[in-house]
Amino acid sequence: MSAGPAAASVLLAAAVVAAPPAGETADPGLVISIVGSSLSGDSCHLSFQVRNRLFADLSRFVADFTARSASGVEIGRGVFAAGRVRRLQPFQRVASFAVPAGDSAACRAVASVELDVQSCVLDGTGDVGVAYCENAFRSEGGDIRLELAGQVPDGPAEELLIEGLGITFSNLTRALAAAHGIRGTAKGLVVVAIPQPAAARGLREGDLVVEVDQERVPTLSDLVRQVSAARDRGQKSVLCMIVRDGERYWLVA
Image 1 (cartoon, helix red, strand yellow):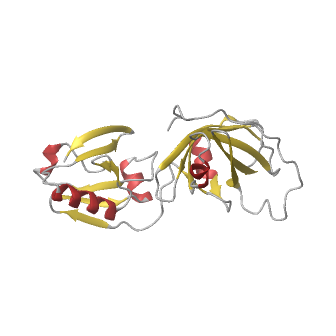
Image 2: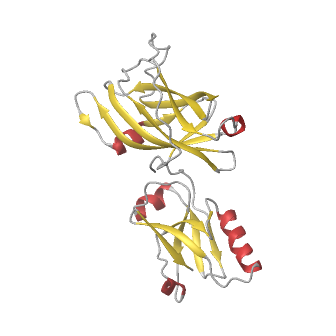
Image 3: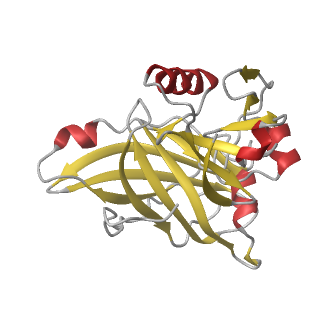
């Protein structure tokens, strides 16, 4: 995801330099949490805390972020960028996004933030790549839940046949993501069986369906609700946004 017009410039705060807490080296990884939020004018400020438990200092870390409400509605977008984050030294920085002037409720409504890592550089190694940081990423505590945009839940697949479409869908799992090369979103449903004539409508096995009739469908129950609503409106088809080979398409099913 990229920062949209609502994105505000990142505000820099001084690094917090202190002795690493006991047990800081126990679990390696890049640990990020959001430890507070505040409103100033037309900007909502999120306080990110980073603990670098990797093998070297982090010299650059950049991620686009999307702030969402408890129901998943997007509230705003911004960019979180950290310069040097020394190994085992707690670090804090503030990043912001725009809200309507004086709308403190919008800032208070932030329940989760998605990070989409854009750049990750470690001292002595150069750009280790986004995948490295994604694999090392961990979220711990904090006032606001933090997720990685490309992180896929590890759990069993649950399948559901939508008889009106003749298509079987599954929740997204790590096994399905690996099997179909799905990356970049954890909010969608995978097409796992699509017999004729439904296949002629353009959907394929392995497609990730993220929206139906312009509403998100992160769960099977969301999909059932959208298809049922379409039937109630007398629709004979639904408009699907899918992700295939990393690209987004609109298809009618």
